[in-house]
Length: 212
Image 1: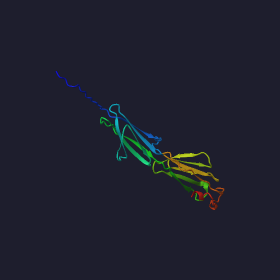
Image 2: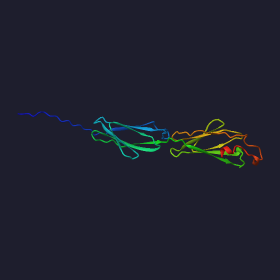
Image 3: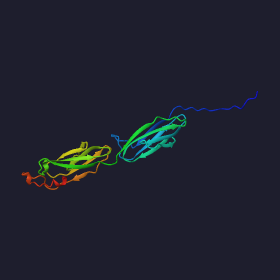
């Protein structure tokens, strides 16, 4: 009739992996690019055993394991990043691996100009300037220009033609890339009276020099 002491045993079962999210600060623009450093913040939740750690890797590099339910990393160099991440709970369940892409371009485009003189007489009234921009990271979004501080004309893509009326004019131009970087505005003001009357081959217009 002897009875042993009553003992208890606890069994805890968690079959559900953690849920994960990530947030990029700041977020990308409409073109999917950033032009500043980006902070990636990872978070995980687990209502069963609780989150043990978060693991992430950048461009298939060495994984970084952070204990707890949150982690973060700062991406600063220009280029495209693919970041993969998942979480582990205290029961050993692993969340699905997710990926997030971050693209950074901090460098504005460069702009050059070329002059086409259709009748080869150096008179500007029949000359045209082509503005061309290059951007090796996010690509050129648009080229903009104005004449005589007038309304700005914006042309989508990497080049824009400019045709001048007769006379002395001021040209201002710049370009924007797909990350939102804008080049410094370049301004050129030719001097002189502009194109002279015919015969054109006697015209030594001061317009030609500033735009060559």
